[in-house]
Length: 423
Image (cartoon, rainbow, N blue to C red):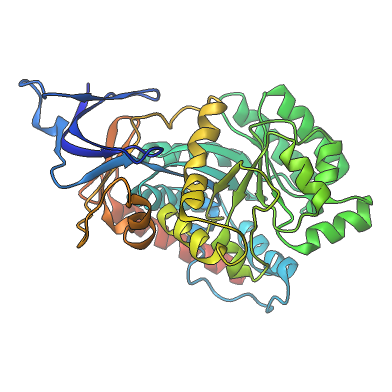
């Protein structure tokens, strides 16, 4: 059954060409769109959205998210005030993830899905950790995402930081999940994984013809630890374990790389996920793409789910540290579509769309669309969202689940999580 967008103004995400037409949207994971001269008379009213005065374009994707952090807003302060990045992880995020259970994971995923979709994001690449609730955690997230209408590419963050047994459980969950779903082999970061873990991750990546998803050089500590313990830098270590050869691999952050490492990246097919706001929040430095090549996507690192906001921050905060233009940042935002298409990951076809109710006081054209995107548009202008050809947000409201129910469940689970963290 097709959906029709009546009197739409379609903006091509690559050329910014404006096309005024009716649009037929076919359903399905690989559904297409087409411009049509008329809408069949015998078309049910709920299959037509009147887009007069509105703009239709490709929806957005998040290249690096942590849905498990959704209930962190307003949580009690840590028992010890962190003085560096390692202590931020130890006293805040590793303390939080140790207290997750299946219900909290589900509530976090449901809220993340709702927040993403309402921001026009229909695809999320998520990096999950819950060392005391590993088994079935990825299936829980996938189920929550899919119920609300969000497409995804998941992984479990395998790490040795909680002991060998937890690392083994992470591998078991990863293999179990990859047998039935498309996904990635998740690793935390070089400084919390042993050589044995890297070797096993390489074998698992090859077995399932996929890539890894790992934090890289987010802070100087990652490099310092690697030099002291392995006598090499982080990307050299990953290269030695054949972990830089897959075009499906995602390296998050990549702030502290030397010229040799940048050369490794330029000559490999892997992708980088930039997370500007998280880096600023943690006070760890600024991302620069100088010498890194063009395989760069944008993520939020669990800070929020709004990719319009993420792109705007990447422009405003990044232009001081690298030769940027708004167009370059916009391409990074849209690179996730190239990553997904080139690697044959489904769920991000042409029929993933946003309808923007954007009433500008100035003309909007193909020539100035980028300017409007960075200086006028917000996620508040997202009125409808279409995922795999189905309407999942209508008039800023979720279709497949009551948002108030999600919020009520999330608040209950947040209280539970915070209480556990204070024990």
